Picture: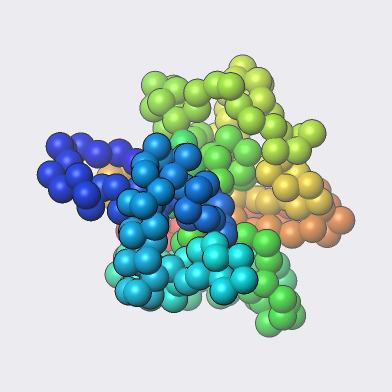
Length: 253
């Protein structure tokens, strides 16, 4: 979701970045796919892709000829995260949460109707990375942290971020607006959000919003685990851990 507040001055740059933006949704991609998606000539798309390849922002598979994001993008992403105060502040506490809970901990920020995953911290007991990686996006309405953030907004602001129809990612995804509003109110009362296999089957999450000094939800923290490990007792315990360290983070925002 792109929000351009002023007139675009350099159209050619806009086209190039639109091409690069296609890789957020899917990888790898070929010239024809991008051309059809953006309505651009194949020759233009090919030239843009080859330029990004030469600069290291894209890599090309020698067999299929398709492209995927390159290491230069990772370098930019890392520089962005390192310069975000919320990441710098939250990471030490996320490590404590991961060790106390024994599960993976995520830091997210709200953008439009989505949350963006900025950081992931794993406990020492988990050697393999989880399915969500930094930089990925998810809809707010089907994530624990998204619902926690929405619960800290007024109804008018929520309406801007939740517009139907709502896509079902699993059979448990809440797709009815009224039912979602009811769940958000429950989230507000209990102080944390739940993802009951709503984004990904077999995965449950507990999440809280992080409120800054302006009393606005700046970010969110969540604990994610396989549903078999997420008993009601564990959910309550994880919520307590998140709220404890969340308060420490909020003092610094």
